[in-house]
Length: 150
Image (cartoon, rainbow, N blue to C red; front, side):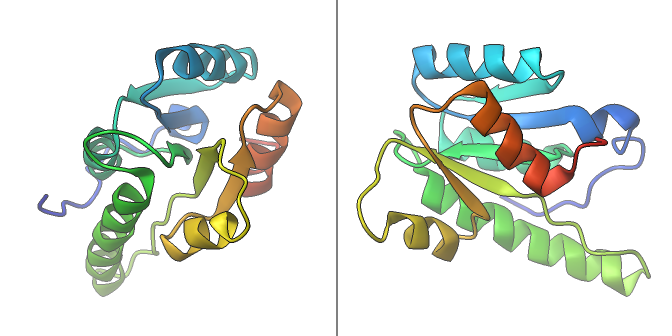
């Protein structure tokens, strides 16, 4: 995947309300999309980590919600790819006098084993939300990362 900086014009007002959901399970997708839409967000969906990493390099998102266990590419590997892309793009932006771009990645996982949160953080994710979760929990974690006024 060759890094490309975000294109001009993709930073619109709606980008502040646009989220990427990377989730392979259809029912989990449907439930999460319903919750996010009820909160006023626009959602793009990727069915696996590879598709999620590709979407994250081509579009601007306020937050990425990343399942950890998926076929094709897991959320840990996808997050590492996204962070590597951001470093390359950020260097180009900083060299041109612009500011760094880093999108918050929130892990969504049913795995609550000890040390799992740390594994998520080590992969470049910023936070962790255990499944199943409720709408107010999802809202709180998103607001923590992008603020209430988005």
